[in-house]
Length: 515
Image (cartoon, rainbow, N blue to C red; front, side, top):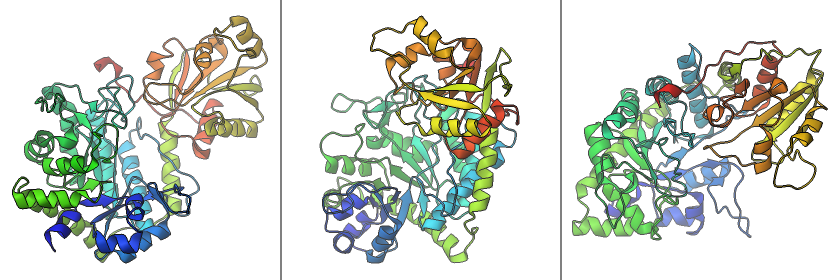
């Protein structure tokens, strides 16, 4: 390979980058990159019907693979297994068998990737929740986090698919979102080592193939300002090379988070890509391909040592060897939708947690509760979780209405009289809430009104941040943590437990007394 070809081997591009440079045939002739991001979903098309986002079809993936002169290392955040009836993202917490569940979920991910011909998953996310305004992880317990995600990584790798631990050095101590602005990990270094450092070291024991750095600072380790700013991990040689590769001893490949986010944008994508590579990133996610020429110039001038490129290629080769061996020996299972669905059902059932039942309202007496109001506290006017819940209740003979705007006239206050008139029409009120990162994408008046309903006939059902129970509903006596996303199976499992047909087996995901 030429020097330029070696540099391009570190580039993981999007379909947008390919199509803005002439399409697959021309692009791979001009830019023999080593990696490709596969975004499975509805593509964003321009006026000519050309994909200009990150989503595209499996057919387009195969076309790119056809025109590439080398075998591409294809990565994705997720793939759907052909033939599955629904998709689950249960949080895997609260059951003695959660390690087996975690392994099964990793196995499902691996099966899905093999089914679509994708080599490498950009997950799991092993971040933790320590700040009430974030929902970056599963729990705030590093030991539980490590046990779960070691098994998930094992399940992925047992299917011959490369796995990633992210987002280094760890989200979840600050409300700042790196998609919009530089984030930060605020822990002092001793506490960082006891929490995030511990979980990453545990992932290395499972031989995780890559670690994704992200656009956040770790001032307790790198506090040297550049141009007046503390460096984010993406641009920090101390965090990426000295800490991750050196002090922690990570031997796999370091991949950047997407190089287009607001958390690292300075207005010069080429310069940002060069700095990320110089700092120790081995794989550059969504870079402008024009940066390859600049990296080449800096290597030839000695500004970037050749050893930096050699280190990157060695670590990429490590990933490729693992994946290629699996493909050659077929050391993985045939994709099995039935196994995937059954394993997901079991996980969903175990994840639903009855956090409070202080009035013994649950299980519901189906003879007493015939008409139910579902209040849509999600970010969508037409909430799928509310509709699924309504459908499932009606299967059990319970009439259900859905309301979002629960006051009749525009007003800047909520009136108890109006709330009382509404709730008098129903035997029970279910507040169906899905809110992430400590915020509600709902009308202010609905949030206000949620506290005016009679607690003796109100149940909070929450799909989002585990801190909502303490922050927004500390006095509500009946509260359910779903710990999974809404789908037909989670709605069915929820109603079974509301009516006492099945028991709640989940436990809280947070250890609030250590905060």
